Length: 85
Image (cartoon, rainbow, N blue to C red; front, top):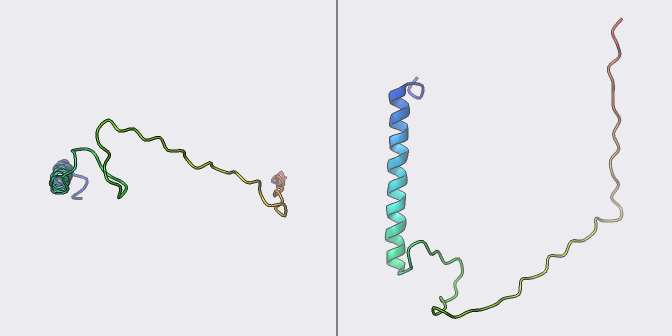
C-alpha cells in the first residue's frame, strides 16, 4: 500500500530526484579531478588534439555478406478451425 498512496508516490519521486542530483555532483567532481572540460567525455585513450587541429579519418567499410547457401526459407500453413455443427 506504500506505493499506492499519494504521499508514498511523492516521497519516491523526491528520493529519485535526490539520487539524481547526488550522481550529477559526483560526476562533476570526477570530471574536475581528471581535468576534463565539462560535458566532454573522452571515450579513447588518445591525447586531446590542440584547438584548431583537424584530422580526417576513413571509416571501415561495412561488408554485408549473402546468407549461406544451405539455408532454406521456412514455409507455413494456415490452419483453420473446423466449423462447429
